Image (cartoon, rainbow, N blue to C red; front, side):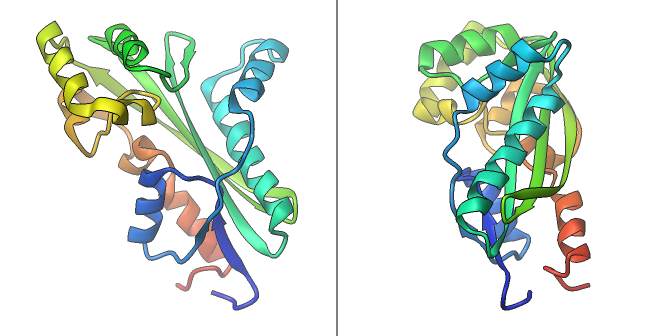
Length: 203
């Protein structure tokens, strides 16, 4: 990695931090301070037929852009993920009760997780991409749901889908179709290739 270039992740997501560290990247963490709800709502109001990929891409790019303005000497990674079910776009639940409502809506149905990633430098986004995964939840019982929420506690509020696929959340599913890294919140393989293209990684 060139000495003059810093790599910054504009996200405080524990899953994304773990994935990038496990991949061998050296980076700083500077979570972007943006109003995600306001941006999402504006897109839905202004863009007829806006899809999950549109929202995830805009949010990832804006996170990267904002942090890159404050750190102009760095290459900044922005990432975002949205959940889509039947055209409805979900946000992270604000309470355990809301998480339960979300899981009841998702139960016995297939939803999409759309993850986007962007790179910015000096306030300009110069690369971005997205990927989607299909997530089919099983028809779990009310007893299982209650036990799951009790086991997860406040952790259930940290994921837009109310689950940690790398943990107990896997028990919610009967089928998963898509890239593991995309499911956890970042299209990692395209990102790594782009970092190699930019000579931020060797090989």
